[in-house]
Length: 353
Ligand SMILES: [Zn+2]
Ligand SMILES: [Zn+2]
Image (cartoon, rainbow, N blue to C red; front, side, top):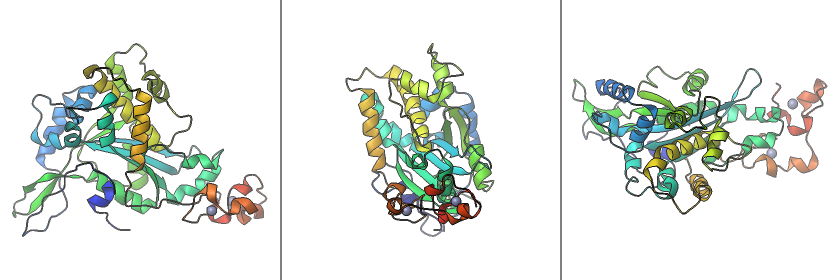
């Protein structure tokens, strides 16, 4: 599939505003670099609490912020791997919002910060190479359950490409090197997870080039932000489900990695914004439902919309597979006498071989 353009990365229907690298009319734009300003941004964030880092990423100004910090991008990530060895990565939820975009909503963030939540780009990636492992789940259909973002099946190598482009978002401004070549600057990235950092999993699975990640200036967690809020119900043992329900947000029984990342981000936004905003008449549940529907209309230009985890063909999902009516059998499983679960997949999607 090759390199994706930034527009492709960002989606078809998105009305969100992003920074694009400026280009010199004479010089070719080269690979973005991490300049010395990035270190100043890391130092700046190291002086803030996690709540303050989140507030800054949502557009609130902080004293002594370096200029480059204004281009920060907040990225919420969650990886879901199979519990059984060798723990193949099944799916990734990755959602992002630029500080500059968020800042435009601060004057009118909407009920329960709906306008902010709609500014977020929601992405749900199912790793095509590992999609057959859905057949090891108690209910293979659950692998397709998703509420936030349009699900896309993506080959491993293409997922690496997509992620690298996300982690290399560049600013509107560029700097000059010694030859006068214009070089785009990378946006400082702030990663958000619920509790455990997700970057080590991504790095282990995709073996990114060492240059990827140099612009990650802070990693924050919603659990820690809840702890900083001082609410009596918040403790080290609080789960994402409990926190979400404490915030009066409905938490679905089954969630994708994208859902996990979305509630991680939505909860964090509520924790940061609620003390600053008057009570809304709308219910938080309807606001989250609206966000959910909106997120599904923001379509990325990569990956496949449909892949059947039962027969392995593209163009349809498992529920609509014509083989369901006539029954399926995996000859690989049959040949070794493995009869259980054999009606869940064809040999194309056998998770055992
Ligand atoms: Zn099928
Ligand atoms: Zn099989």
